[in-house]
Image (cartoon, rainbow, N blue to C red; front, side, top):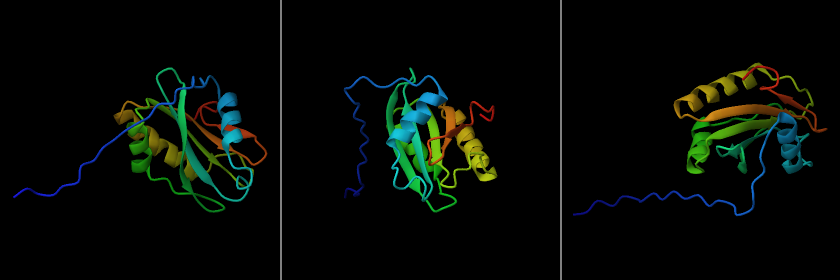
Amino acid sequence: MKSKVNEIKISYKGHPKSPVTIKSSVEISKLLYEHWDKNTIGLFESFKIVLLNNSNKIKGICQLSIGGISGTLVDIRILFAIVLKSLSVAIILAHNHPSGKLQPSELDRQLTEKIKKAAELLDIKILDHVILAPNGEYYSFSDNGIL
């Protein structure tokens, strides 16, 4: 008798347009701000990842979580499932601070370090972690020597 086991299929569909290449935190913060919902950026925190190929060309932006006024939860297993499924080799982390305060919290730093350690095991580069304010200003972990 055959056991019934679900078959799992994984697929990734590339985008035919020529992707945007990221060269600086200024470029990525502008792009993220353009794609952030302006009606909610000042209300609650969201966490997103920017998926990149070997040439730092953007494959896509994925929202991982939506939280409350002062925080959001990120399941790094889901984060890396998305990264691996999309065959990305580098990522940029991003979240917003509805308060407009750009300095990373201790929890922001701890989460970034946890993701960075897991990424090293999978040979995935964390290029930056960007915090966006509702007015479009940003804080870059990379520019500030935290990554």
